[in-house]
Amino acid sequence: MRILITGANGPAGRALGAQLAASDFTVIGADMDSTPNEYYTTIEKVPAASDPLMISRLAEILREHQIDVLIPTVSDELPAVAAAAGAELVDCTVMI
Image 1 (cartoon, rainbow, N blue to C red):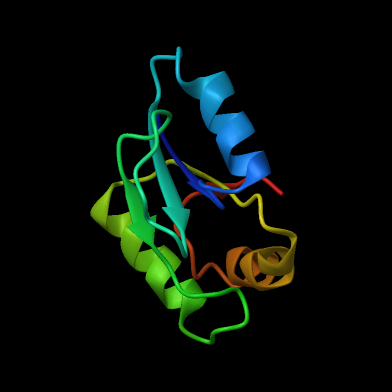
Image 2: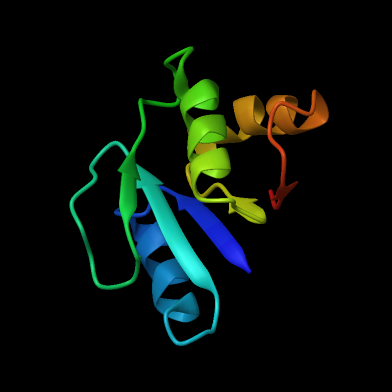
């Protein structure tokens, strides 16, 4: 399974990354700060949640990495990600 976690360099993203690090899942991060950390295979740069291009960038990452599950950890992203999932703009399971 391939998982994308937003806010990868924030407190919730790092905590979730640490929990999944020992799993057999491929865990990709997304964050405005794409500095690598020990929990993620890679961290993709994304715009701020308030940026209208944020959802299209997430959709691009989902396709590029063939993501099965998206887990947003940034509260400001939740409304846009939920709306995008409802409109089928993201092609994976979204866990909010």
